[in-house]
Structures are given as structure tokens and as C-alpha cells.
Amino acid sequence: MTRRSTSPIWHPFTQHALHDEMRWIVRGRGAYLYTADGRRIIDAISSWWVVTHGHCHPEIVHAIQQQAGELTQIIFAGQTHPPAEEVATGLLRLAPDNLKHVFFSDSGSTSVEVALKMALGYWRNIGAPRSRIVVMEHSYHGDTVGTMSVGARGVFNAAYEPLLFDVSRVPFPAPGREQDTLDALEAICKREQPAAFIVEPLVLGAGGMLMYPASVLAEMRRICSTHGVLFIADEVMTGWGRTGTLFACAQAGIAPDIACYSKGLTGGALPLAVTLCTVPIFDAHYSTDRTKTFFHSSSYTANPVACAAAAANLRLWEKDTTHRQLEHVVDMQEQAIAAFRDDARFENVRRAGTITALDLKVKDAGYLADVGPGLLAFFGARDLLIRPLGNTIYVMPPYCVSTNDLDEIYGAIRDAADALG
Ligand SMILES: *Cc1c(COP(=O)(O)O)cnc(C)c1O
Image (cartoon, rainbow, N blue to C red; front, side, top):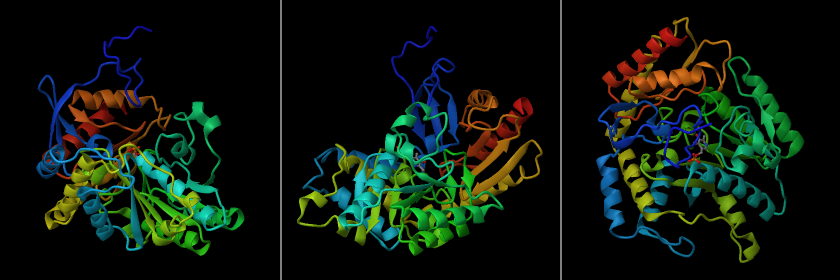
């Protein structure tokens, strides 16, 4: 097939044969993106779930500019720097109490890889090796080989299947079937002595914005504790206010053994990730025996400029105004989505904190639903950045979004159902 585009760029999750014209974005401010030809786009998905306080937030931009004049990159083995120390101590103030150590990396996927390596390293170093990982059906933890292994199998990773390692799966706790999930987890923990259970707390993002109650999360944590299985919370998407609390685990009153944060860690300005862990996990690697070292590094571990952005983000979360703004977004989102609860064209109308989602009723529900490309084009033509997951439409705005913006977004969703439903 001949390509229309002259650019050599190969874009992520993009079928160039169907979608070769890229939108040129030259500027971002608050909830808006501006195109080269002067159009204003409302960013209804926070640029793939990363931008929390809005594009080019002045305090984050300022912190980046300041840091760029001081130190932009150093090797992080055997050295440290002020922004990294500030981020680490700031995180310990905000994260669950039992998490006492912070390992830096540069993407959500990497933070999950680090979590899995920490878990296996822990069991090996205490002299009781375990390697089995338990995961939840429909999960997404990243696109590297390790994170694909612990994620849902499907069209996304069919070609790589031979490289993926085997895991044990519990069903998604769909309404009315929560006990099946808990029973399956309990049975696997008893039977297989797994190293760890990894889960996205409260909302499975890429799996289709599937939501489950905090009580189930609390029960899963309890089962893991009872059986001595490490509990890994992948809060890469759910962190930084998305579910209505700073971290989703707080709603279940639980503390994981390992937590992964990225996306909104820098307010969505620069790539950075952290994996937090408990004292026993760190201590299992703390030894004069050098074979027990935690052998992991990325070139850009704790990049100073990214850390400066994260430090600015943490300072924003210390302000009451940020928390009030978050509550305001939760209220606005509830009002907006309520109107769809008895709209017969949609099903599974749902909300978790600032995230709303609804499924357009179609015959072929799922990520490759026929309606998907049409929806994407429809919203694009309305100058909205909304990327449905198949027939699932979701709204995950930056927290500076206005009522008017949301009116436009939900008006377009209604019109899309008229045009395409
Ligand atoms: C996005 C995401 C990841 C992967 O993060 P990247 O920065 O894209 O590598 C991992 N886990 C969850 C839950 C995510 O939503």
C-alpha cells in the first residue's frame, strides 16, 4: 500500500494504513491543545492519562526551567541530587505508611518490571525462591515483554506470545461475581505459593476502564497477607487523584508491599516513574554479599529535570486548593455522567472518582469493535481529544477542565451515539 504521509515516524498504537494524517500540535495550555493551523482541542483524556493539573502548569514549567540551568543528567549509581531526595521524602509523606524505599525509573512499564524483579529478588535473597505471579483478567501493566506477560493476552500481544512467561489469572470482579475473584485468588495462593499478586486498584484502565469496589481490593489484600504473597499495586494510571483520592489504595484502607507510580508523577510533564517498597523487601537486598544487589538501572534513572517536575507536582499536592479542585472535578463528572445512566443507547455507565466510562451498545463489543475508528474520527472532527477503547468511551480530564469543556465533551458523546450508535 502506498503511504500518504511523508513523515518517517512510526506512531504508537497507530495503524498507519488507516490513519496516516497526524494532527500537528504546537502548544498546550491547561485543558487545551493548539494545532499548527490554529484550532483548539479539548484534551478529554489528559493526553493518555498523564496530564493531571493541565498542560504547561506554570509551577511545573518553572521548576523544569530552573533545574535545566543547574544539572540535567547524572549517573544515579553512587550519586544523588537534591530533586531526587526531595521527591523521595515527599513521596513517603503521601504514600501508604509501610512503604519506606523509593526506586526511580523512567516509565510505568519499567516501574512494573522493577516491582516484579523486587518481588523475585526478595524471595530468592531470603532463601525461599518463588517465581509465580498472579494477575487479574483484563489487566494492563505495560508493553514490555515482562509487563505484557502479566497483562491480558489478546490481539495486542499475539505475535509475542512465545516470549511471554506463564502467570496465574483470577477473573475480573464483575458486579455479582466478586466472590469468584476472591475464591480464585485464595485457591491460587494456597496451591501455588506465588511470589506476588499484581493488580490495578479500583480501575483497570487499558482493559476497558473496568471498575470494581474498594471492598474487593481490601479483601484481595487480606488474602495475600494471610498467605504471605507480596501485593503489588500498579497505580501508574490510578495514582495522582484519578480515582478521587491521591492513590486508589487509600479508598480500601490498604497498604501494598510494592507500589508503582508514574504518569501523573510529574504532573504529566516529563517521563519519570517510581517503585516504592517495604523495609523487608529492601532489607532482603541489603547485604555485604554483592550477589544480593538489586541489579536494575535505566540510563535516565531519577533524571534531575524530571525529578524537579515531580517535586513541583508534590508541592502542588500539599496545597488544599489542589484537593478542592479534585473534588470539584469529581462532582462535575458525576453530574455529567448521571444523565447517561438511563440512556438506552449505552450500557455499563460508570464512574470512579474523576474517570467516567460508558459502553456504546454494539453487536461486536471490544477493542476492535467496528464503531471504534468512526468514533475517533467523529470526536476528532469536533476538536476533541477522546480515544475510545473500542466501543468504550471514557472521559479522564485534567483537573483544570471547566463545566463548559465537559458540556462540549458530553454533548459530542450524545451526538456520536446519534450518528454512529
Ligand atoms: C500506562 C500504564 C502502564 C505503562 O506505563 P508507560 O509509562 O506507558 O510504560 C502500566 N500500568 C498501568 C496501569 C498503566 O495504565
